[in-house]
Length: 178
Image (tube, rainbow, N blue to C red; front, side, top):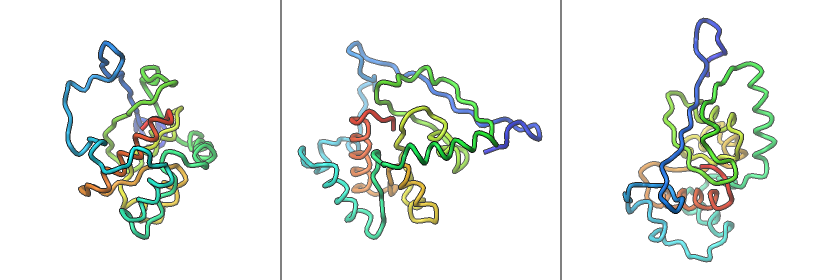
């Protein structure tokens, strides 16, 4: 994160755009799909509860505390405390009006710095559950990602990917942004 406009540096910028939709209002994915993202094939029982899904995390991430992805009870107080950073840093956000605050949404972004996604989540006006590489959970700041209810993901691992997509689906069903 670059400090404001000091030293001629630009403030970080987050731009959000509206997704194309079909006639019935669903996002238009152009008919593309990928078997890794087919939640019907992930082995989850249709009546599996959130707590049962959390219990599955113990086998996928042995010894790792994952918190409550998408449902952290400390999300709002943690985010409020992080808003104090706005006193020190200028953060520009463009396109917020392109996202319907009343509906779940998937927000996709590319980042140049490890702090870019954190800034995006903190600066957004909505509850956001972001995919976070499992290595961040294993580091000294893992507690932060648990407090924020982020979704751990071990890249390249099918079980981890299926579980993370299940957690994301649950977060979206709860009305969050992912």
